[in-house]
Amino acid sequence: MSETTVYTPPKVWTWEQPSGGTFASINRPISGATHEKDLPVGEHPLQLYSLATPNGVKVTIMLEELLARGHRGAEYDAWLIKIGDGDQFSSGFVEVNPNSKIPALMDRSGEKPVRVFESGSILFYLAEKFGEFLPNTQPARTEVMNWLFWQMGSAPYLGGGFGHFYAYAPEKFQYPIDRFTMEAKRQMHVLDTALANREFIAGDEYSIADIAIFPWYGALAKGLLYDAAEFLSVDEYKNVQRWADTIAKRPAVIRGRRVNRTWGEETQQVPERHSAADIDAAGA
Image 1: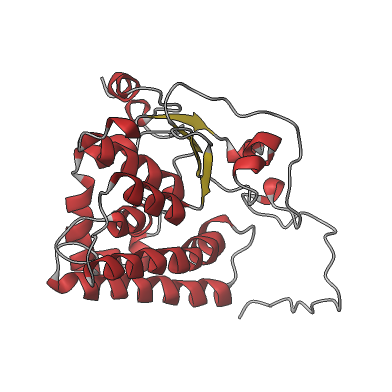
Image 2 (image 1 turned 135 degrees about the vertical axis):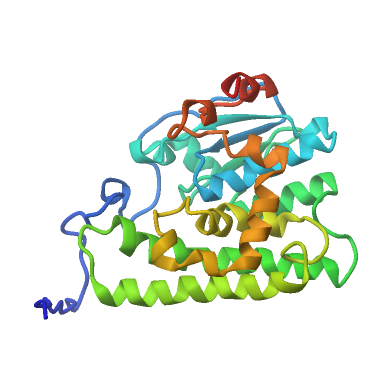
């Protein structure tokens, strides 16, 4: 049996050294800007500041879905925020999102610009603005919102819990990996059970619940998150696999997953998007 170092928390925690791990350079116990820099503004009504992480992809998929349904008012500029470089701590970004997390959206279509932050809030805002992907009647509307909030509450245990300790922590410890692996598998089983008798997460219609959940749990199911498919035995979740395959084939999803992406195959990278031609050029 390997030796375990017992950590005794101090009476008062102080920030004396970096926490270690992949994102140690950008983690800190205070909020606010670290440097002065304005955000760029393009020609479209919607200005998105983001990166193609699961949370960022939610919004670019939503915008591409709206454009696919003919909503020209959903045209957008997508500006790259390099979170590893600390772009999210610029004064301009903090004005849009005081929480310094991507994605962040500015809607400049009205008399006064409207800032929208937190990915779930952005999806809800756009769904209401354009009247798409969110039912108007009950109980279907509340069922979509149930699953949207489920994703917002559950994904931190997948990302900050399982993902951090399994993939990013500087050292591997059994207790947190066991704890969050158990939770990740429980969440996948929740989805698999829900999808046993319905085509999409909230029923028979594609909605913002699917758009929110797919970049996290669809990616996990298809082995695209944390290189953990075998470890989590994701193939056993047959209903999630079927659902993920269905979503992944949607043209707007294919387009949205490319935006603000700076890694992987070159044809899948569109670091910034200012027109549909930017995506088309990348995939040419």
